[in-house]
Each structure stands twice: as C-alpha cells, then as structure tokens.
Image 1 (tube, one colour):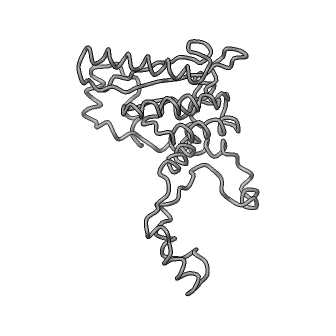
Image 2 (cartoon, rainbow, N blue to C red):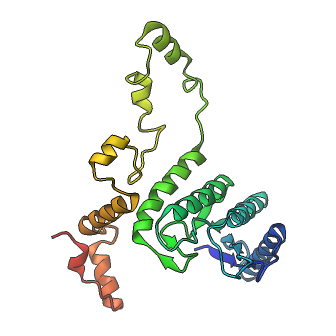
Length: 260
C-alpha cells in the first residue's frame, strides 16, 4: 500500500499567495515526506500529493472551483512528472452548493486543465460541492459525464494512416454516396472514437420540448433512483461478507445488498 504524501497548503493563507510560491512550498513538503518515508523503509512505495488549495483573498474562504485551483493542481502535477514520480492532485471541487451551471463550468475547466497536465490520479473528482463541504449524489451522476468527456480529450486523436481516412474520403466523394453517415469506417469507429453522455442532453429543441424540457438535474435524479433501486454490489462474495460481519458491527443487512 503506497504512502500518500499530502501537503494541503492554502494559497494566501497557509502557503504563499503567489501561485508559483505556493507550488514551491507544496512540492518541497511532499519531497520532505518522501525522504522521511525512505528513511523509515528504503524504496517504500509512495504517491506525491501536493494538494495546493486556494483562498478567496476577499474572505479567506477556500475556493475549490477557481481557475487558480486548476493552475495550481496542473502545475503541481507537471512538477511531479518532471521528477518522474507519481502525482495525485485534487480537481473537480466546485464552489457551488448544488449541481448547477456554476458547478458544471468549474468542474469542467478544472478537470480539463489538470487531467491534460498529466496528473496520474485526481482526487475529490466526483460528487463534491461547496468546496468539499458538501456532497451530492446527483452531482456524482453528472460528474460521471464530465469525467468521461475529459478522459476522452486526454486520450487524444488517432493519427494512424487508417485514421487519416484518405481511402474513405476517395471512396465516398468519388464513388458516392457523398456522405459518411453509413460508411464502414463510421460504423467501425462509432463506439471507439466517440463518447456519448449518459445524462447530458443532445436531443433537438423539438424533442426536448416534447419530453417536458427535462434539466440535467432531473435526469441525474432519475438515473440515481434507477441505480439505487436496481444495482447491488457483487464485489464482496458472501463468505467474505460473513467474515467481515463476524469481525465488525455492520449495520447494513445482507438482504439489502441483494435483489429481491
């Protein structure tokens, strides 16, 4: 089990207000922790955890959804990559208190910047609201869409000879039918090149109107109800569950973990 070396300075409060200075302090503290771990056990596995947080300097309150938060986490991840170490940083911490437009845009630009900066692990990445003071299960569902989209951007673009599509372009434009909707390549790449949101809406305005103008929060709530009503954990075998219950006071009845 790796030791997680977390340094959680807050820029402008417990670390310098200057973005660069805050990163310097966080990295130095994590490196000191790495030295300590190796002093105890040489070569022990560890994860660098520069949790560079941000203060709103007008109030002193933490601002987990700010652009400065995205810059700090991305910069810290890149510095740890420079040292050829494993980095775990926070991302996806909105300042909004509820799943709304603010939570969406704050989570999206944080994940996009930090994920593409090369962080190995992203913590606090789903469900968190109010700068880690709250948690929303509906937000967890929405965040699944956001994280999936960001992972797609991290995967990047295939630039192989086949992906350059010269043969497909020639066949379609010269031989017909002059569109790519039903081409062999389109069908082959439909599930590998493209990502489809679970609760994000891509219907036309007419279809959306006919469905009663559902919001993403409405769809997330319905999805959550479906999951909680039909999904049961299968990763804990019955004999292991019995051993755990014999050793600890588990209050969740076994029958609540199984379908009726």
